[in-house]
Length: 178
Image 1 (cartoon, rainbow, N blue to C red):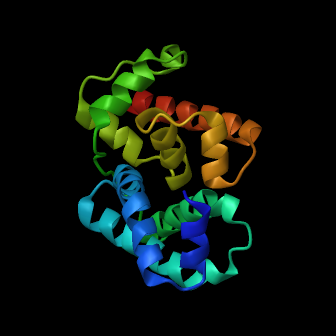
Image 2 (tube, rainbow, N blue to C red):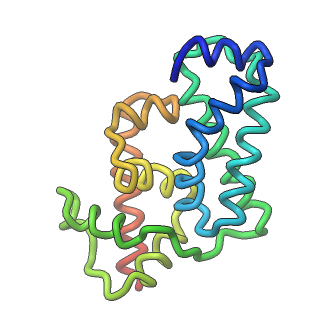
């Protein structure tokens, strides 16, 4: 993201912030959709992310951390959306075929039991925590490497590796329950 654009947006320039929203909106929406499983909740989480970002932008000191800061806001909005539902329920994910295929082709494929249908995968995925879903979505659906995910979430790469491994194990356990 252009530093000058972020500086203008942080200073309160609405047009600059609109450009930030245009640049970041679709990837954030796709991530929220994959985590939450439905468009209305994903749209709300994305919108609330940008509202929170606008309100808190002046307090962001390090513009190099903008993506990580925005990513954390989105993940927190997804958590709140699930909490608002009253319970974590099984939700279908968008592009589950792509995520399933990528997981099945990767080096961790031997850890995953066979899946009979996309609905089985969606049900298993829907029972994961928001953090587990986010890691799997960012890595397998969006193709971010461990370093990029670490920047996006504001955590060290080693922590991403460990949490990604735990998320895969949790998914394998849920798939085995099917």
